[in-house]
Length: 187
Length: 187
Image (tube, rainbow over all chains, first blue to last red):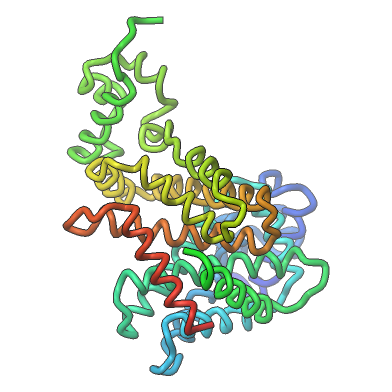
């Protein structure tokens, strides 16, 4: 039950990320995360199953992607609908410094990399499902979804690694244009 | 040292796959795999680190991909070079029944799915490295590699799930054509 703590999950998330960067993910304990956030371990476990889930839980990315895909006009091509979904995802990913540090922590740990790959595969499957609901048949639905996630990964990495913050939405558009140029010639 | 056993690794691989399909991956032991192959557990461990690696080890896929990428003519576009690499992979993936059963076993087990995602991410990184060696700059190298793996995944799934064996190479070409059509309009 416990007291109500204002924005406990946000404080826990920020504290965890700080500690993962300072000491390493493996060396950090739940007790230390809670203490840094000025909260108890009990409060931590009301919000997250374990220290790994601090980096993955509570992300609305999948809901945002699917809602935007459903809302795309019926006239949109499969790839236009996927691009609209990824644009909507870019709108909720606004904290570049958080995303950058999260990426640094994940890149340093094989278990976290696996979890991230699973998350991306789940997003791809959700996009493919959404496309099928729009009447796009397989294998085109699956191909458009996988390709969209490939574009997203590349744009996301540019967003968090380039010195200047050019905005994820803009980098997504650039990556889609590059993909178009890449596929127009080859094959 | 033990006696020399003709094609021990092939026999162990076939025996393992039979047992994984019959009894489930988790329920199968190394001792059972060795017995089914008419070999000892000691021989098993000379070829594979554990029962999971029977499904992943010894695959020449990465070497084949990278060699074909390196061998593509200098005039080939990044996507043409990636397509040539995937064509070469299709040439070594000739046993559709083995690939089909392997896919069934992997789809039934979360740990194996993770391992497969890591393998595909490693192949994508190797393709991107090969493209950089050809003088393709990032982010185009990474995008072409990720997109190539997306095409490969979709074509591979079609190859092992469609009733008729139309050949992986042909399905790869169809998927590249579909990708071209998908990206030509949207974005």
